[in-house]
Amino acid sequence: MSLLSTFLEEGLAATELEVPLIDVWIAVRTDFAADAEPEIFGRGTRDNPYDGSTAVRFDLIMRTVVGERTIVHLGPGVFRTAGAGIFVAGWQAKSGQKIIGSGILSTTLLYTAEASIASNVKTAVVTHDATTPLQNWAISDLTIDCNLQNQPFAVDQDFPRLAIGAIAVLGDNLRVRRVRVINFGTRTPDLLNGESNPVASLENFPIRVGGRATKETPPNSPGGTAEEFTVLPKSLILWEKGEGIGGDGRSAAA
Figure 1: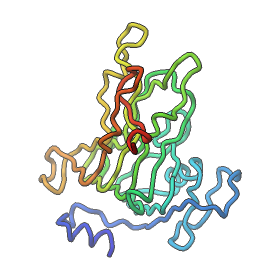
Figure 2 (figure 1 turned 180 degrees about the horizontal axis):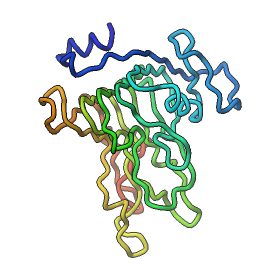
Figure 3 (figure 1 turned 45 degrees about the vertical axis):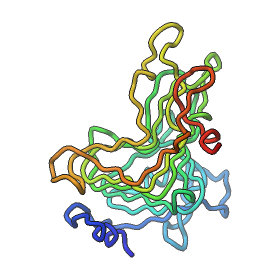
Figure 4 (figure 1 turned 90 degrees about the horizontal axis):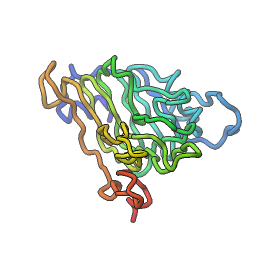
């Protein structure tokens, strides 16, 4: 069954969905040399998918090959990514894209460690330039691991100055379905060296969807829609040293 047929059967009006022109398949492949960077391997077809086995390769494909009005099929496995990129080149969500994993417990987008984060940063793994709203965008059937506990930090600090969520998108006709989020949040305390810390004072949502037209609301009215996503109940914990609220996959699995 095509994605368009699925959307129509679930009651989403045809006028709310631009028919994508391209299908692209990305897989975690092992048949290409790991040190051959930053090449694009594969043809992006079902039988010969692009190789997304490293963060450099995956982000390069998402940034330069995958355009608007594209269905991105992610195979099983862990796809490492710098997301929108803080210190390195990443990628951003684009209008008309449908990012579809192979299942919540089969496909994972893993936010990779970047340069040491010494200053206060707030980001999301999947996001875009907020000055350009998305149109007709969807993501489904995967896990997003924000990997907070493994982000690097400066030698004179005890934690990264980072607040991270999974998805932050704004626009029209946006849909998040069957997405699991783990290891999100921040370890940064409310007070840092006796002073209020800006990261801790910022709201940090694992999934943030906003905009206008949705399945439930008429066009040009406020609202976005996020359906059937999962935040693990135990993935919000208070760190032992009182450093703040953060996520820890190991605790979530306890």
